[in-house]
Image (tube, rainbow, N blue to C red; front, side, top):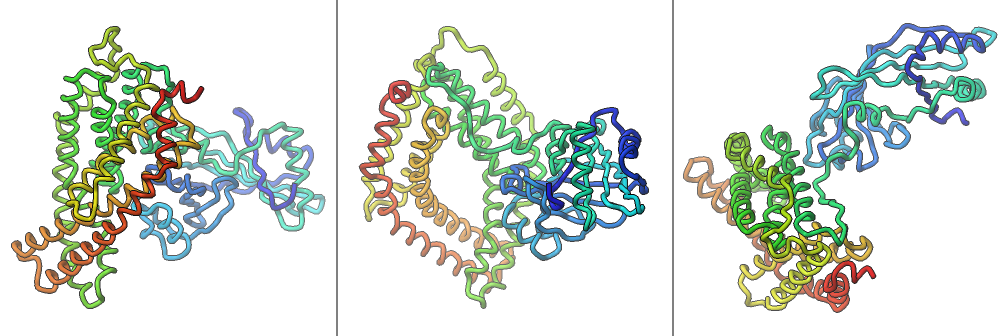
Length: 527
């Protein structure tokens, strides 16, 4: 063990600091320093972007200093830090420098949320040699953790951290061996975040907007569909509070995606639920999509605003600034309306009724024609049919085709993508992943074409409304007009790239891969 290695141990329950000091005193000289109060808050985004990026962010406070630390997830090595009393919600809250830049790149538009707070006392035991010199320090941390929703703090195991003293590496290694071999103390992980999260009922990565429902080919289709719907409902519900409180724009985004996926599954996993149930909940989730749309529109424009401004000629940039204020005002009013609707009896009843249906007993003799079919058989059938529709619609588009043709193709491509996501666990990842990647490239092109048109149309509408309300002078109208012109030029470029993107999708290899994977039931394909 080298002096630079991290070395920490856990004291079992009942093995306190006094007993540790007594055991060490039989072998080493021991002197105890005054206890030091510690307070540490671990932060991440709701969807664990820092954790997924391999780092841990914490705000550490003691009587001596307060600092924000960014550490390696695996070994708790400090990558960068900055002194600050402030607990940040956004990278902009962090003093300028490397830490702020790294956070901004990882979290993007997401807010930083305190996950768990750890506080307590740290006692330092100094190990002395025969000359009464300190050769190693032991920092003994007795901590409890706190989190929202807990009635009382949870105790953590006492941690014993060896702090090396320069020039006394051998003594430090000898002490580490004594703790491990003689006292039989278990090793402590470098960071306490995982233990603290478990103590408060969390685990890293416990939220993701991705669909990952383990399905087996032979399961009856209605049971498999209910599992998919339940996963989507969990995602939707997980984002309601953050959407209502407007913590960041991605809560609403994920809520809307879960809503769209639910409506798509109701339509595309055909014949597995009773028609009355399908029609009822498609309409009710359609309402949810409609009432969340205006706020999302404002969010998107505010997220894109800096890019819009930077893309304008320098002399026009100041003219666009009133648009930002207009968007902020309307986002605030739309958000207030959305908050009321997400707290309404109508919304609560939708969620309650849907959950009750999903958790009800499966019928022994279902009326839906595909309910009892194996999901592996139905999945391949639905994907293959939608793939063929995409090919047919795409091949029919030429230079004279109206924009609506590309919009319809985009809808079909999104349905195909959703089906691939719903049924992904039925197929080998190595085979499915390239198909999804190729489809995403086509969807990106179609999405860009449509989104740029929608943005141009909405900005034109904003300009009219601002002029009517007296909130736009000539400079603002000119700036918005220039921006609209740029968006339409970019849309034309996206249209010009469509044929190449579709041809990359409509290849013999891609068609053969879909045919081999989906034209036959999963069980037969696997055989």
